[in-house]
Image (cartoon, rainbow, N blue to C red; front, side, top):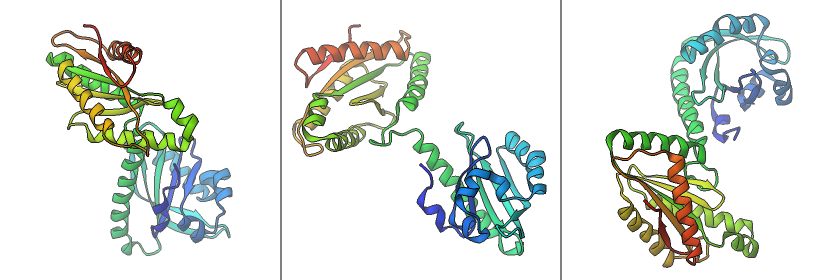
Length: 298
């Protein structure tokens, strides 16, 4: 995922480090301005870039501040160049909030600090946008752009908790692309990926505000429908079948099998049970000849 291509356009040093303080990425400004080789920085980490006194300051102040506040702003330290020159820099460091342990660093030449504040504010905002973009990417399936299975689990737990507390309905569509192995075998995996990607887009467009669409794994997809009973969920499934019957997706015509389960108000249930029932209904749809929908038993 690293490096995002636009980071080399910034007129300041940018670093990404991991929980072990290894440098995962240094932009071209760092490499060109301070004369370091990317491989050296990758092996030696922060000690290749910063003076010993700066490293001590990191241990005594910067990292404790990151643990407590999640961010350390405008700390002046010393960078050492490849020629062992000392350059004062102003750094701001932000801790990733998604549990990766990554830290995002911005470095500004502090020999003339009066010119740096506007750049600092602008870069801080861009770094924040970049961090949010990376966090969003971590929630998405790389091929389809839909939510991945991990994020689906979190969204499912949240929606189900809300439905259980408020005695509201919630339905699950478990969707499987029919004969997908044959598509891969006959047309190649690249065409198969195109089918997955375009079907994911079709699925996303069919969602209402509040619905959750995710790639469950392989050629299986899940759609969560809040405030929707199984009868209305079946109508939504019918519309998916209708859309597929009239178009080519990835240059091919194909069908899907859909299994549906529901959480009935006011009966409480859990996500695992709902997926299990939807999977049983999906199995019935496949046995019925595919290209159809089946509903889970109450």
